[in-house]
Length: 98
Image 1 (spheres, rainbow, N blue to C red):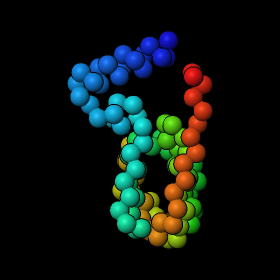
Image 2: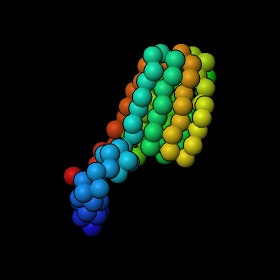
Image 3: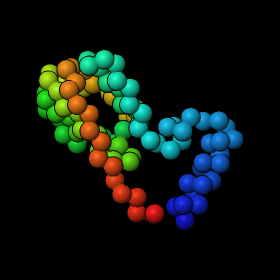
Image 4: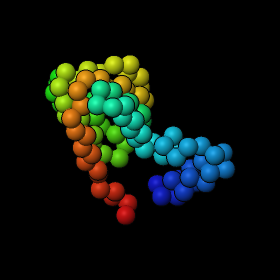
C-alpha cells in the first residue's frame, strides 16, 4: 500500500514539476565553506553539543562534527548550523519495503 502511495505522489510531483527534495522529503544539505551548513527537510535534533550535532532525517541520521557549533535560524523544516565544521557523516536507514 505504501509503495502505491509513493508511486502516485511521484507521478503527481512530475506532473506539477515539484523539486524531488520537496516531494520525497529527502534532506537537502548545503555547505558554505567550513563555517555554515543549511539542512532542509530534517525531522528533529537527536543530540547537540558544541562539537557534535546529530540530526534525524526522513532517510537516516546526519552527524556533524566540529568546534563551536551553533544551531541558528531553525524552522520545522530547515536548520542553519554555524561554527568550524570538520566532518559530515550520514547513516542511512535500510528501507523495509525493498
